[in-house]
Length: 340
Image (cartoon, rainbow, N blue to C red; front, side, top):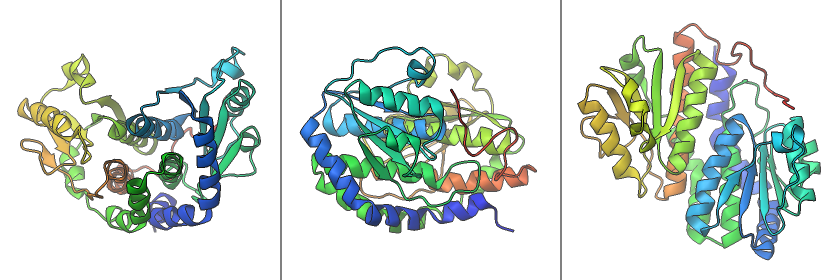
């Protein structure tokens, strides 16, 4: 019997197409608002998988516009009640449910502090949306599995589409229009060889750089959520500043490398770790000593990085089941986490 998680992974191509069609007007309107504001800097407001989506969007904005993007801790508003100075800025709040009290409080505080606030949510009639200047429904549809998949993916697509409208980036717009078909290919890639190699491993590192670091962070969270497996995400550069001391013989390392300016450096680190005996894998044809994992090259560095999560989702859902877990209902977790 197919799990909710597997069904929702398979629904991602359709969900992306739905977002690009149904939310096009709201994306264009919010993009115009960003052009008019011309923010000197941006901030993000999110937790969990949504925060990993925010990290991806942060890199995309910084790489494309040169505007710095910082993550705001929601507790600044909900616990510390710290006054913020956000005049001239824009804030992107991301939440599947739009209900968590701390996210809502920080979004409201950002609006009151002068930011142009943009809510990316799967629940348009939500408190977070009501606290925002503009709302983008990312159209993921119902998501029953506790571990987010299509809502994570679509929130990033919404952020990229918003960016494309803001700066009128034709190349990114074309890449997004091509994305549903590319997603259909990516969700069917087979990472079975990785499962066979991991064996009885109970800890591993996930590496990335730039937007792919956000993918590595999401992948590490999914290992924890679905399989009770310890996984940590690091920049492929940062891992050498201490964490590499834990990498011994056959310690698993998965390097998420996109077809972008960081690919060579990510692969170099993965190959170096493989040369020292680590069980290293990389999503790149440039891998030498590390084992290559299947990937879909999309022709654009941002969508290329984003699609790396799709075969991983399929792998980790199957991995969870083979280890005796239910990926739809991780222990001690709820679908909507309402923190204060």
